[in-house]
Amino acid sequence: MITLKCPKCGAESKLSFVEKDYEGPRRCWKCHELFTIKIENNELKSCEPLSQEEYERQQEIEALKAKFRKE
Image (cartoon, rainbow, N blue to C red; front, side):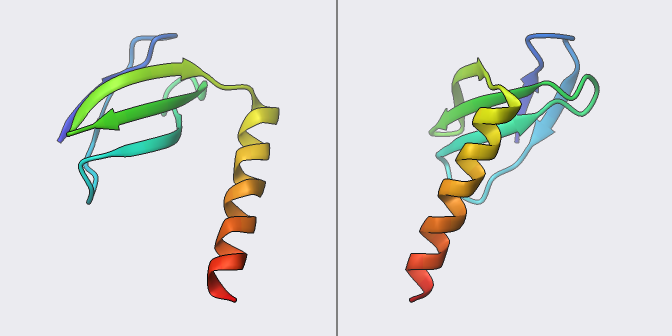
């Protein structure tokens, strides 16, 4: 289990992942700010601000990747 602290409001949240590594978006449960987090070996490596536009663009890219994986 990993504890993340929101860089904007300081709210803590606990996360658990199936894999040891993860890179992707995360939204603070309290202030709703978006961030891109990178976790390697169950350790937080980076947490960068993410705009709503960039988040939506990332979601579109992931949807396209999923579509091509199915075909």
